[in-house]
Length: 287
Image (cartoon, rainbow, N blue to C red; front, side, top):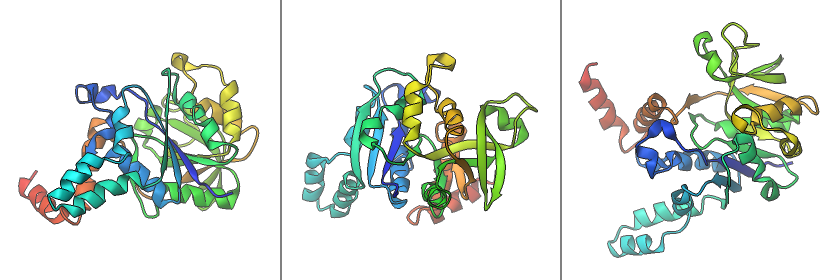
């Protein structure tokens, strides 16, 4: 079945970026001049996604506004003869069909995914996090869709992590089946040093079958009183095949300060309108 829909949980508080995120959602922080969440949506659309469900909260109204039309702004830009800007901002609202659902309580990322159940229906779908980026060709989401179509099961994006960092992630257990693909037997959340089953951390995104909704609906609250997606995936592997895929690309975590800076530099260097001048500036610093 074709993957047509994606869920983007974006209801978190973004406390690591206070005071900037006191009034501005962390997903709206710009990488140069494009909000992080727009880059994530563009990745999904480039991967073939047609409908995007964004899970927000009461403080995230600006995300909804960003993906809506802005008639007054377009009109003023048009009157000023800035047709290129009109086309650029209008294209944002036309990237995909958008559905916005508010997560009434902060009950975890598993609960956020469960909020999209009625919109997704009984079909497989993608999950992309609202503060996670990767520069990849094809996009990571497309890579996972290709694995799903080939293997016929849910797929988790993973990457190799150094031993001294592994305890910060959910780490998969499983066996390689070839072609950067692993058959999963579970996920160990933030394993203690020296206890991780592999060095492959679950990062970036997922392709999930609708069975995950039935599991999430039955999953009790775990750490912090929240419903965790990893707990549900540990149940999913007992019911149907689940695979992990070592994606190809450079991943950034703009939800952290250093990751945000790294992403800004790399995306700026890749820009045709900025790259050469910015590269020359960085070289002039002689760090």
